[in-house]
Image (cartoon, rainbow, N blue to C red; front, side):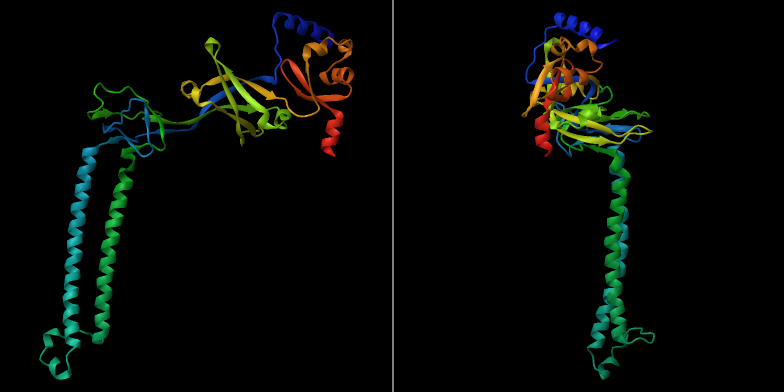
Length: 352
């Protein structure tokens, strides 16, 4: 189809669809996703009896709140057994320390005596094995300090091992947000109930609802060269409603295979739309990408106006048509129904 045939099609479309040109230029429609600030999953790695299930009217919970506990009674029994074992080992260590402290007291008393007095206090004399009394005293003191350190280390390690073993049996909110269970709650969720962990099934999802975004992946290199702050995104909803997001940030996502990296733009939604965004999150939607034309030397021309130009039938591209209709301008942005042109002299002045 040449420009003459294309012009007839566009002109008919313009007669059927009324166009209103405001300050915002529609660039196109793109597959997009509605995403929260962050999202996480909570999972039990095994099956068991679940208790302490967190239930809130709004579904929202604060960071650190306990969501659920598995095998609570069994865990408490194992904790009691651990504490009993620690008590036994603590008593054994303290018995050793008391014996050493008794030896230290006797040796200190012996060292305070003169030579004549030591002859009558042989029961306090240390078994020196060739070592001097002072060296023996130092050895005893080091053994006592070692036992104290061993006792401290033993208790710390036993408790750390216990917590690591049971850490997956208590689920907590990783951040403040909305909590949603991935299974049907029992009739009386306030009582302990049997839970079976299934492969690939999470216990619950947590959504950080402090912000929601429309995420659009850009593959057009030309769009990537435009100032991102001038972009906005709109999602049409049933009943004539819309979600509109303003540019927030962009990032480069590394793709697998032979494809190039993806440039993803994120548009923050208004807080009043968060409930709607929560229901749409993760699903595929169509987003209308828009560009706000600002600055000096920018001219807006509808495609219908261009196609009505006498030279349209002889042109094979928009660039060719613009060069004939507006020789002092070049194409800046190609939108759905209009083009943005920038004055050549303005470009030259900017570059210089």
